[in-house]
Amino acid sequence: MSYILQTNHLTKTIGGKVLVKDVNLHIKKGEIYGFLGPNGAGKTTVMKLITNLWKPTAGTVELFGKTLTPQSYEVLKRMGSIIEFPTFYEHMTGYENLKLHAEYMGCYQHGSIENALELLHLADAGEAPVKNYSLGMKERLGIARAVLTRPELLILDEPTNGLDPAGMKQIRDLLKTLCSEYEITIMISTHILSEIESIADTIGVIHRGRLQKEISMEEIQEMSFAYIELSVEHPRHAAYVLSDKLGLRNFKLTGEGQIRIYDSQVSIQEVSRTLALEHVEVTALGKRSETLEDYFLKITEEVE
Amino acid sequence: MLKLIKLEWKKNRIGKYMRNAVLLALFLCVFVFALAFLGIANDPESGVPDAALETGMLFSSIEMLTSISFLVFTGVMLSSFIVGAYQNKTMNLMFSYPMKRQKILISQMLAVWIFNFGALVVTKLMIYGCVLVGSCFMTAAFPIDFDMVSVEFYVQVLVKSGMVVTMEFIALFVGLKMKSSKAVIVFSFLLIVLTQANVGDFTLRDQVVFPVVLMGVSLVFAFLSVMGVEKRDLM
Image (cartoon, rainbow over all chains, first blue to last red; front, top):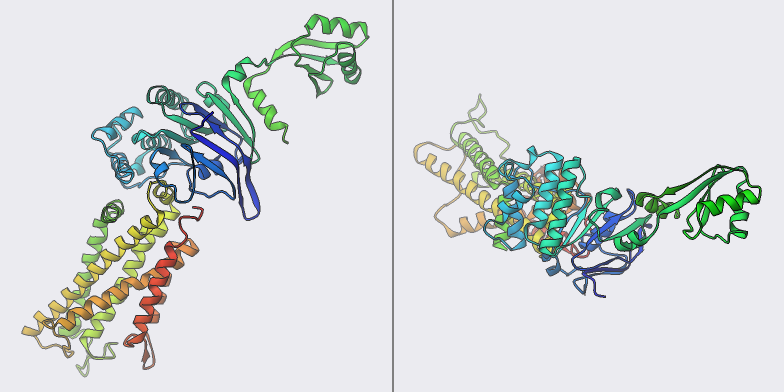
């Protein structure tokens, strides 16, 4: 399969400190890729490497089928990005900032600035100096600038920072539209899963500089997050029974005498009956469901 | 390149600098005129000029005053146009544009150089013109040692102005290395001391070889400022 963006063993070390190591991302054309990870996981580092602001210590970035080099300028024309936070010429108006951007990008189309401002609900504020904008307005103006030249690939580093819930929803809807109607591929980083789970096609989880998992939402939906949770007096004995008598492998002790059984083959009645027959005292037993958030938390916890 | 230079002027509000340069030129004009004709440099008792114009000649005094002023002016602009752009992260945006980073930096340096060179030449010509006009009606306290109809005069004005503005690239290099706008300004003052001050009777101001060497050094530093920028991480 060909990817619009791919990294191969991408590694960045600064002053002996490894920021990211062996990151292998695969982003398909036309998808929204959610890049998920806690603060300091290496999301921004990877995005700086992708946008050529930083150069990799090892590994490569492939954009539009070509390996990125320090001399790769043309690919930048096909990309829009916000890294860390959007910066502007604060004394200039929102409109002037966008116009300046269009001139530097060498693609000025009549009406495109007005459209971009309209798209981000900034038409009324377009004539005001950016220094008077709120944080949320600056974020929106940053997105307006990034989409102004209709790039094929959009790299957005935590673009919903400083936005209220309504603003976040607006951005999510906009990204969906850009992806579906204009076929723009979007890579969006965040540390909050709920921000992207409704729009992402694929999610990459990064933690401590390493890509832990890359999984499509389709695969996630096929996975079962239901489990049986039981509390027992003697967890070791109970674990032995589950393993030996019921032949279960996919369960874990979660502390304080609690056991979670992820195996979907076994029913709650069967567990109850077997434990009773083996004289295991069960104090609580029930069926629970894990959220997607728990799932990703588990992935990052496994590294701890 | 011309388009890039124009965009640099536009986004850095060149109008503001133009207004300040005009004010500076007017101030220098009035100051030199008062020095030459209104006797502000004269000793009140003897009536003889005792200003720190040790050469007693107007040409070198005007050159010195304008050079000092524009060394600082150029330093301020370089720190704002380039070092400031690194500090307020607008350089991140600039380096995301599809063009060579060297080209961006050179356009920024040229935007400052061209403006200051032009402003310095115009300021000098304004001052020389004022003195010349004044001398038609009043008696100057200092001998007028320049000839505005000779080609040599204009060559000197142009070359000296070019050297003064170019010299500031040394301060820019220091500012970029130290990632500090203040360092550019401080180093500009050091350059003033180095090139314009005198120790006893000794000064490097009127040396012939020194400015040429300094010009060469300045160009080397300008080159060093843009060298390797393509492969460097933008921190």
